[in-house]
Length: 109
Image 1 (cartoon, rainbow, N blue to C red):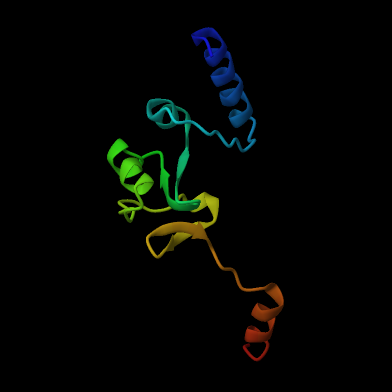
Image 2 (tube, rainbow, N blue to C red):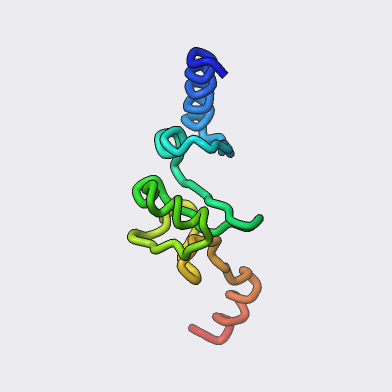
């Protein structure tokens, strides 16, 4: 792909992200990923081996995750994303169902 086409695609991705759309970008070019991503998910042997925020994503951590090494977290998950750390990975929060919450509080008062 030529440089001009890539710049147009990057501008479109940025515009869509600013509108609030989620974009999944797959790239083998590390500088491109680091420059375009809010979060980087790294795969090894067919599974996600780590998810790093933009602030956490370094070339070293990404290379380690690509090799299957554990990802060492240095910050916290994005609090607005509904994610939390579990076994060193950023995962979705396990929320209690509203009906369970009501039962738990039924006798309080």
